[in-house]
Length: 377
Image (tube, helix red, strand yellow):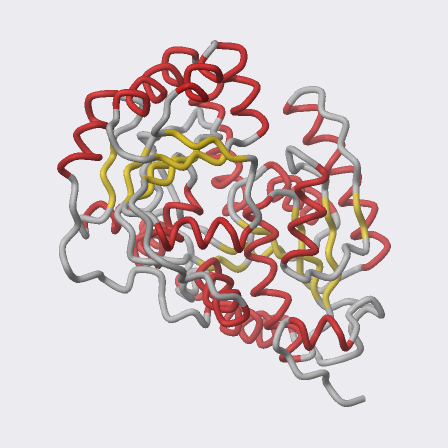
């Protein structure tokens, strides 16, 4: 019987799960992985699991997308079935995606405690689907793991009991540091800007997407632009795909794996993105960030002078490219890279988790690949 059930469904979940899985293996705490299939592209999902050497999920769902409400219902049903089969002591969910909300709903129905990793990331955009997910999961969760001091203060100010809120650091940083130990991500520095766009707020709005593209076309700097499948469809729909392809300073790439993405960040002068996770990775790697979304999930990055909020404003984007430069020193916003170990230790103490045999698919090859010594039986 697993002590922990972990819900994953999207690329950011998989990246965080690398560090969490590694900590569970190091501490010999059994877990089971439930994959909702929320990820936009199944092939990309499979590739990322292989790249990160993640154990194949014990439960995998193929989600035939219809609409948000129906997708949520299907994920809840799938997760509830898996949890009923496994009867874990606690369910772990990451961040603010639909899969996390579905995991919280299913667990609540079965009276299984929920632990929320990356809790307390609030914005004023209460109509945003991810904001709704985040707030619901927090209200359902028994244990909250904020990744920054601001997130911790947000939870305490909202009235969550201090004994349920644990500032642990950012598990994303754990993964980044762990992967950088296994792969050389620090090549030669390139004279380019790294751009990514994938959020629905930008891809579903021709006006916003157009403003971003016009800023890139007018920019005189070399640009590398890995294009998400949803973004590619939007660029084709609006006619900007051909315009970007014809621009000699812009290099369009297919979606990149995690390691290649880190190498591109590490080599860039600046990162221009609407991705919350990639912007944090850029900060950890010492790269100034220009945000293509007005939502500010980590105010500390702006306060520290390392993030420029441009949104989809062409003038602000270009101004950031030309004039925005961070201070020489960085604050250690995201902790020391040991968040996952703290999380597993806290869960073990709170829920009386015991060491035991992990699922058979966690082989010695997998353990060695993650830099973890196989526990003796």
